[in-house]
Each structure stands twice: as C-alpha cells, then as structure tokens.
Image (cartoon, rainbow, N blue to C red; front, side, top):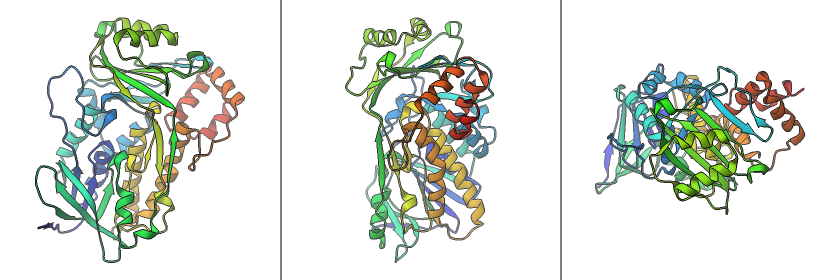
Length: 437
C-alpha cells in the first residue's frame, strides 16, 4: 500500500543530497515553504579519524576538492557568511596565483597576488558544512536512505507533480507530492529513463555526449606539520611531452591535511605502494613537490581510479519537457576531475536556478528554458575540460598562440592573471586575445 503525503503548497523536492543537491536546497530554502532533500545513501557520522570520511556511491569523496573563484562567488550568493564556517573548520582561502606553484610546458608561471580566491578541502567536510547551514533553516528537511524510483506526473505527462520513493531500510513505497522536483542525483542519474516513462515520454529521448580524457589517476592524503608546510597551498604540474603526459597536483585541505593526485595516460602503470609513489613524483622532475613529500606522512592508502570522462546530457534539446522539473549539477554535466570544475559548475547552476525562480514570480515552473540557460552556462567549463564543442567535436586551437601566452605568463603578471581568470570561470576565454599581443 502506497502512502500519500500531501503538503499545503510550495513544496520542492531535491533528488540527491550531494554537493549539487545541498546547494540547490540553499537556493530553494527562501523560495519555497518546504524543501525536502532525498539522499539515497547515508552521510558519514562525525568521528575522530586521521583521514576524511567517505560516502558510498561517491568515488571522488576520497579526493581533495577544489572550489574555483567563480564557485566562491556563487557560494557567496547562495549562503552569506559561508566561508566563516569553513575557516572555523581549518580550511583557509588561498590566492590562486600568489599561493600556488603552477608549471606548464613553458615553465613555471609567475607568482603574484591576483585577488583570485579559491578553497580546497575534503568532500566530507564541505558536505558537513552545507548540511549544518541547512539545519538552521526550518523549511528544509534532509532525509537519508531514500531511494527515488521515478517521477509522478499529471495524466498527460505535461507536468511533474512529485516523486515515488522507497526507504532503503523499510518495505513499501510512498508518493511525495511537490510543486518542483530538482534532479541533483549526480552521474548515476536515472532522469532520462524517468522522463521516457512519462505518458508523453516517447518524444523525450535524451541525447548524450561523452568525451574520454584518456587519463587515469591515484589520490592519497598526507599530513604535514605546520612548521614543515611549504610556502604554497597549491602545486600543479601540467601534463607535457617532457613528463610523458603524466602530471600531479597537491593541495592543502583542512588543518594539516594535504591531498595529492597523480595522473597518467590510460594503460601506463600508476603507483600502488610508497616507493612507486615517490618514484612517480621523482620522474616528474619537480623539486618542490618532491621536497614537500619528504616532510609528509601518509595518512591514507593509495586510491586508484580508472579512466575519467566528461559527459553532457542534452536536456536543452528536448521538444517536450514537463513543467515542475529541472536538472542541475552532475546530473546534467560532469567534468574530468583533473580540472576541478565540478563544484563550481554545480554552484553556478544553483545560482541560476534561484535567479530563474525569482524571474518566474510564482506559478507553474517551465524547466526547458532553465535547461537551455544552464547549457549555455556549462559551455565554458565544458570547453576548458574537453577542448571540444557540445557534440564532441574538437575545437580549433592555435597552439602557437597558446604557447606564446604561457611563455609570457612566466614573467608577466597581467597574462598569468588573465589565464587564471579564465581557468576559474571569471572571464571568457575569448578575452585572452587582449593580452596575447
């Protein structure tokens, strides 16, 4: 027997309680009387542990997470004073240029204050901060262990009116009515299947573009005593012919915890033990990284990840899209984790959702316009992470022009700041032509 839950009005349901879903809940909290977040897994309980907790179904939860400057700006719009809570937990902001050692094929980029602010931390800590902020909002309820089985629709399927759920630890299903359903269930989203099951779903076959990066990686947590910490918070070695297209990144997270990621082309061996880990780093020829790890203590095992990809769901191309439904975050577009754009894209999507709802001024929500606007917003991070257009075709790039740009960035602060502003989604890539002369 299905139990029918009814709410008076203005109820929004968010499918997925990851970073994208929690950010969506922040965007909805002041715009709906009730917001229900349905998370299929259970969040890790807070405990004293040498490494950040991980969560089932989130493989990247073992990796350090980077919030780009455009993501910082989006967080500011969604949650006033959010950074204070993060800083209180031991996470410090850093200047993406002055506090970073960045190596490219042209050499090491100039370090100079840029005002481009970023944050790095573990996923568990960031999710905990987002949930704590939601706990202070009476309109929001976060429910764990809730599996969403499908969408509820009007008889003809022209609008979504809720979701069908099942609590993992109990038998039975429930109908949860809503004025708006937000799919933020991530890379494992079943939204295309759910849409196809609607009465008019035969006109809603979702196209998808997948671009394989051809890279694989390992990650590991380290601890460095504060007195031994290097004079930077971020180090990045770009994949070049000189390194055999291998690369590395090291970021300071919370407290004295540092995350290291090593990348190599698919098929090449990746380190599985301490000796191989240090040998891999030595082969990159970067003394700064090697020196930092001589003073570091491993805090976790080495976690291996297979080949990565970027994926775009083309909801914006559908002819029929039900009212009362939107999709955001990784449910729509995922990026190669190397570029660190996922959280920032999700935060920008949540801000767009808030703006879109304010523009609607009540009434039935028609989500196709939102999906089209979101596709436009996601185009820049997609181009940066794949080098391809929305259909997977290679973008034309002037390698000589890019070479000159990176060469000038080794000594010219204006050029390196412009490059980083594009990387952090603060300005479009076309504006780089202004500093390339």
